[in-house]
Length: 182
Image: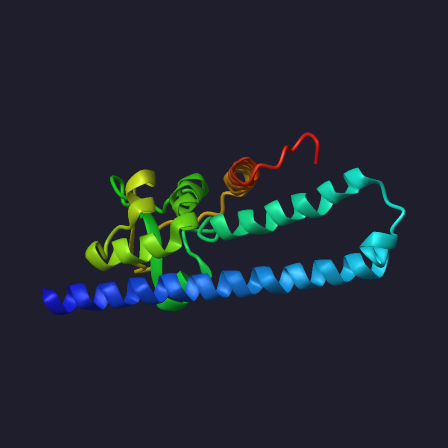
């Protein structure tokens, strides 16, 4: 039993770390590409004739990109690392593949990623986000129905964008920037 628990813990931690590396690296590459394209189109930001409100566009793109991090498990209950390691997210009560909305709710706790990793050391089967969303991670035996739910994925992306927008506004409040004057 201890061997199985240690193996499960190792796979879970590997999955969390690998997902974090893959998603962060992907976001950085996309951000560099977008900044490069923006620089080619606009030129030096201080010399641009674009209106000040135009700054909202890159902020919105950033919210979409970070929403993708929160939705890493939305497609068939598997993130990139879970696909590589043979894991899948399921509903804790029914055992069915977790829908995209549960996946994004599960991942909202990733803003406290180090705490989630520490929590996983003591609870390899479920991290904090799993308890909140009512999910768990299991080995994928390929028997579950893997229907792609496009409507729910789009809704989950919108939830992720709204969550990131709330986090951004909260950050502005903490550092004392009046968003309306900015």
